[in-house]
View (cartoon, rainbow, N blue to C red):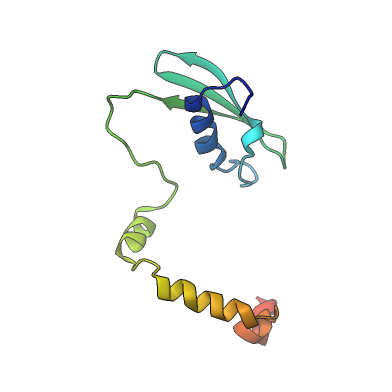
Length: 118
């Protein structure tokens, strides 16, 4: 990238772009994430939503000596469920690949005729 930003700035922007707009829930676009200010180890990041055009702001701490802290929007119950769940294995990927090879887009055939009435 030749936009003049550092690798650290691009990384922060990619991470912030994965968050969703607090108003319309659309994922932020990388191009709409901007470093607004840097104060030692704290950065102020601004975002503009592509969909609803609302502005948002993130305060990011980049202390290199700090322990990594998990940031998530999952509830404790969801976190526990995912931690206990089995991982996707190669056989799962092969099974989906086989399924999709012959799939013709008939979702009502998969979910039943009542799926569209819910």
